[in-house]
Length: 379
Ligand SMILES: *Cc1c(COP(=O)(O)O)cnc(C)c1O
Ligand code: SF4
Image: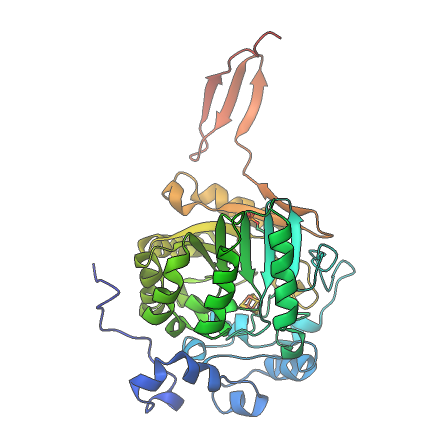
């Protein structure tokens, strides 16, 4: 098998950027500076469908788009899973009566601006609202893309104070937007501040950069963060088309630098609601030492009705994976309850019936087996 760190193949670039020197192409700042953000630019690069053009115009104010040259180079025709995650579509204007702007009630669980505290031991910190690519299914689209809504230094200092004053918080998720949109220096400053709080046990960096801007995962960044371990990384691969040599390099660098990396996939209609797609993705992730952590049911945020799948689709995917794929490649299926109820997990039903202490289960192949249960201890 090829070692992704030395594999010669790179993602073919869109012809527009074919002549860009490698040095610039692999510079994350160049990628950020050259993001495609206007209809005029995108039209010159992609043969847009009428539905996409209409979607771009309709959503320009509510939730604009931005795409790195790298991620755009992965896109193909209008049904391409990369393109559907990044290019607006007129179906984003479809609404349902249960759509919410803030489905997880993050604002309600925000004791100070820039921080959500919903579980006793965990807090979620929003450090920026910028991202390399604005995912069309983003739950935080009410904020993301609006640079003015990012917490400033003073707001962040208050959020850090809150963590310091709340020793029950053991696990801080550094999120956004995408925290890796910040400079190395700023990010390290935040991480160091959190690490100086004795009650904080672990940190999590929630970033989609390995997917949309893998060039961001530089040796310099990793060296700078290393002293602050344990740091977990939650990333967000959704489809095997995103599994490139560059992405593999980013994941392997993270693992080599001691980060425990997990993937949170969001189930999306017509993109990854298919057991074979998830199996291929998860097998690739495991090879890069990234553990599939969650499959998330898409939140009922306005603009995503056309991307949401029936909850049953996720259950069926898990049912198909279990027994066929290494247990390491079988994530938990999660629904984040609207209104701030928190996350709940769903599993395929395996218990067929109970006959006294005899429990009859159905295995992955559909065959029945009996386990004789122990009686309850006498009280
Ligand atoms: C999802 C989430 C977490 C982390 O949940 P885990 O199940 O531990 O990954 C923490 N805080 C908030 C507000 C969240 O939405
Ligand atoms: S990277 Fe995350 S926060 Fe940014 S647009 Fe995508 S889903 Fe939203």
